[in-house]
Length: 452
Ligand code: UD1
Ligand code: CA
Image 1: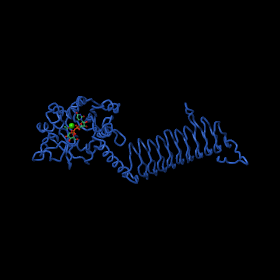
Image 2: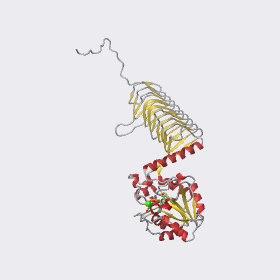
Image 3: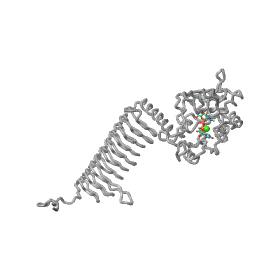
Image 4: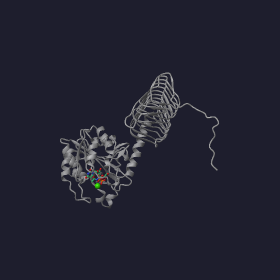
């Protein structure tokens, strides 16, 4: 079986420069969701029909082994499928999917595929309380499908039908090619309707099967930002349900957003309003406090991420305590039992086991050994305005509060830097280094008095 994904529509109602099918759902383009589902079906080939913003869509597809074809102008859904067919020579069966119907499930599609067998036409239909706008499925007295009528072409009786066409179907390829060559555009929209193949199939004596989706929301399409938001909620609800099925504790499954892939070990607990982007791995027993953002991060077992922490392209070892209000930026690699506290920013640093920076600190481009204590208000001056330089702090060093380390510079093993030090040369191991001006007290000094 080959899959054709229709994605040529304008998406006018999105009011966006980004083509509709590239609008993100759970952090990935809608179209990517549909492509993944097609792949899950072991489709032999997948051909995406692009139109408006076709270059952007094609660029997004990259060299993923997908076929794409430009439909210009767009003369209707039947025309769109017809444009794709030459890309799929020797096809046996064709499934038609839609780039703006992103939540369609592989389970439903497998049943549709099975219902089509080798030579039937299988339609995915759904019964709606409010069928307005959709094509209606018309059946004869014995319940056999006779044709589909579009809303704009339907009469009053036909409009009462609540079983509607989702647009998704599986058809025998040779028949489909023939039917599409016979479809005309004499209808209310002046379009070549894919739906018109149904009446032609009936006339040709081809069996027509209908299948209903596992869940009605699978067939929801996106035409507006409001519908996109509605599908985002459904998608997030499904992700949250899967996480809970896997044993993850979510304090509120309605308040988590996963925009990528979240992998969790056992007994992970996630508090409210956390956002996970890209690929995030949480080890066994990790606890994530409320309002955290984690993007492309690996968090070691037993680590606690406290409230309002932001982690981007960083990793921690086991049993760390991060935050509240910490920021781990790209290139941060923390060992085990590292503590990074409030208002501490760490970028492109290695911090070895048991080291702590608990308050108000900037660590950038540094290699920090084991058991180091970084006092409050410490700053690595890593940037001279042109180049970045590294700071090295060896094991067991103690960095006094309010210290500036002017890189490149090295603090030796077991060294102590006095509070307030501005370190411009290396500090030798095991010694106290201080750069403070000597403290003076002036006897008899008086505060100035206000002039009368
Ligand atoms: C279509 C169906 C209708 C069904 C409904 C379900 C037809 C004629 N009608 O109607 O029975 O109930 O979907 O949502 O098929 N597209 C192209 N090229 C085109 C035209 C459309 O790629 O020339 C794509 C659009 O981007 C869109 C999809 O096909 O993703 C459906 O097109 P649209 O015009 O929205 O169809 P509907 O009028 O909603
Ligand atoms: Ca239309």
